[in-house]
Image (cartoon, rainbow, N blue to C red; front, side):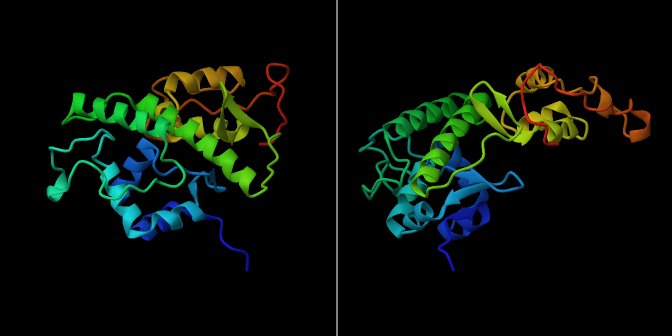
Length: 236
């Protein structure tokens, strides 16, 4: 049996003895980064990286990262009287670098500005997470000799490739509100509307889902051919 290369989020939570909110926070600051997605769009993580992070020393640093802003605070104490400096000077594998530290400092500063309320920088967090995931995925695929067919009909937003085809996106925007679909894809609603226009995907009118009964809503149109607006294989 081949050695397992990836873990799903549930396995990561169990392996690292985390709570769900803790892994969400670690994803925000880039300590843990997905290296791909499964067929359902769920995050997958490098098994090698997670196994290395499972040691007691690394788990301590992981928990420190949830409240430490990566600045030295020798005269202050954190939760349970622990120092504000990580007790074990071990690097995270493989995402503990200066770029990640700068981002963590910036995010901690923003959270303090808006505390006790949630910060208002969700778009920048989503952008950071996507860039980090893209880099980690490319590095993981290169390390393991994985070659993917990138000619599939996936949607592009700038340089970001969304994990969804044109046909599936059309189905999604007629099944859920634009705001919910945009949140699922970690982009803004405005960006989603621009993508739909670019790829000739009909959108429901505003207030479409205010009708609780489906038969009271305007009918769903057919997905028109993409034509020359954007060269893309049809894979609905």
